[in-house]
Image 1 (cartoon, rainbow, N blue to C red):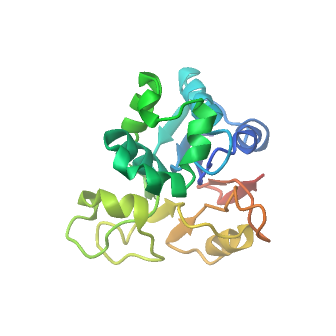
Image 2: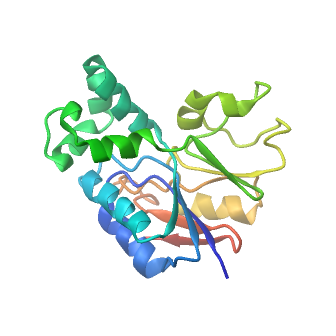
Length: 219
C-alpha cells in the first residue's frame, strides 16, 4: 500500500533525517514523501541534508521538495549580499560552514539549482502541503508566495482552502502538541517539532507524519 509522508523543518539535522527515513518510516519507492522546507541553517550538517535528499531522488524515491523561509533567505543573499546579515542572524553561518564557503555566491551550480527549483506548495488528493501557510484574505491564496514561507495560522475559511487538510512546519511545537492536533482532527497540522531546539523541554525532535494513518514518527 502506498503511504504518504510529510517531514517538518530539518535545519541541518542530517543524522536525525537519515534515521527517520531509513529506520523509522523505512521509506520505499511506493511511498510519497513531502519535505516541508527549511533544510538548512542552525544545524551543522546542511550540506549533508541536501546531498541526502538529492541522492533519494536519484534513487527514484518519490520526494516532493517545498521551499522554506531559510531557503528564501539564502537565495535573497545570493542575489544581493546586503541581505547577508539577516540570513546570518537566522543561522546562515552554519550553512556556509557546512558547504565550506565564505560567501553563498561561491556555491556550486548543482546546489543553487536545487534551491531555485523548490516548490512553494504542493496539492495532493485532499491535502495541501506548505512550509508556513496561506493568505486567507485574498481571492486566490496561491498567488501569495510570501505567506507560504512566512505566515502560519490555525484554520482557514477561504473556499479554496477550507475543505483541505493543510500540513505545514515553520513554527516549532512540541511533539505532544503535534499529537493533540491529530487527536482533535484539526484542519491544520504543524509537524515542525524543533529538531534544533534540543535545549527546550518537549522539543528537539524531527517528526514525520503518515497522512492516511495519521501516525507520527519522531527521532
